[in-house]
Image (cartoon, one colour):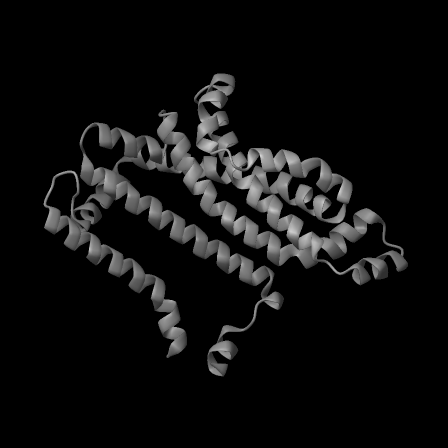
Length: 258
């Protein structure tokens, strides 16, 4: 019973949010704030429009490319920082300087360098995703017990072999946590970059609809983007659980114990 409730909790939370939205819109009764039901009815119209669908697929493509590039660069860098004080000392000041800067604020400068096409938006996504992935990879590598590395060295493993066969598997749960955070940030920076460089994408649809006072479409796009985030997060969490099930406490045991 408790397991069923825990699985239904996200659905109930979304339903509660939609009910609150519906009541608030009915109470305010303004054209700029359509009801949840009106926005939901507009979703099939948006997804049924070929141009809008292509724009959304363009957004997903940029997000996947930016996220993949960030993982390919950030995971090795974070692992090296976690295992080498010199590497950490070199990169930490750079990361601390870049971290507080809103990535959307870099968009105008990046547009001057790369234009308003895919390259600039992908780079913003890459920058937004990289820092949490680096941080969690760093923490995961730093937490690896020295005894495991000593044992690997005693078995004749080189530094590179120890990194791949000991550090990476041990740090994998923490790395995947960072990647999950990065996935959410990729979605956020994707929409933000497309709202600034308005050429194509989900953010472009949303902003154009707002300019033309098509508020049903605006809120329908918000629902679509939110649903996309939920689906991607759930899929990634399922993949994460399959990869690091050995590091996850069994939920049924915990619920039974409580």
